[in-house]
Length: 275
Image (cartoon, rainbow, N blue to C red; front, side, top):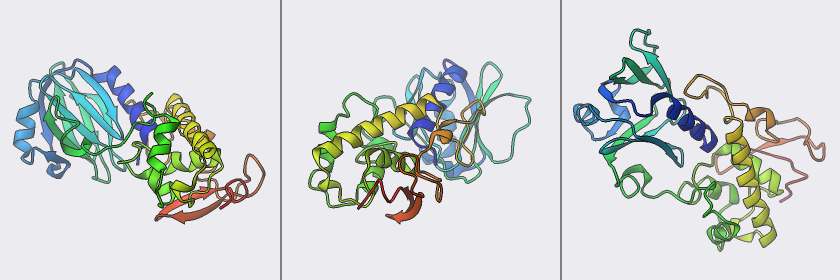
């Protein structure tokens, strides 16, 4: 599933491709992708005639700000967007097409068919629907070591599942949690509330630096991820533990091991991240 850096990269790419384009009509071939409104015809009718005024990210969601509404899109496992000419052949697994007045089309393709789309009135997108219960953004200035300390205080849950909880900190997934915990020297099974002040400070710095560098490199192309122009991310070349089972730790040379924490495959250095 694309995580914060990948979604941020897609958003930045889409801004260069479709900003200020006006939707002439919408084709939907897989109705279950559309969640709000629950009637596909209402979805199509609502979007027709509106112009894309801005595109931004909240957590792992892409928000298309229109004249009166906000289209909230989640890519889930393998959803992707691409801009095409009207006469270009439509690829298999293309489920939603936004037809623009200039003859271009923004097509949403999703092999796994897990993606979702919601349309809500402009101004209500953060108080209703899928964005209503999201946690703090880790790249916002408001995310400080003090805020992180408050989120972890008194928590008996293991640190990795807590970091994956989107109601706590948004945008973090398996890749970047593993990388951040390794950089901070923290075992993923440590009870969150047991971290010392210095460990929390290290973890905060690791989360922020890892995400910023991943965004800079266009995300990580693990499996099928590409941005809106079909380009791969490059951060996978900088991964220190994720996906490196059996390879030597870059710090101490100990082989990286894979364990399961909270039902998720997890990569650690058993020497640098002692329990």
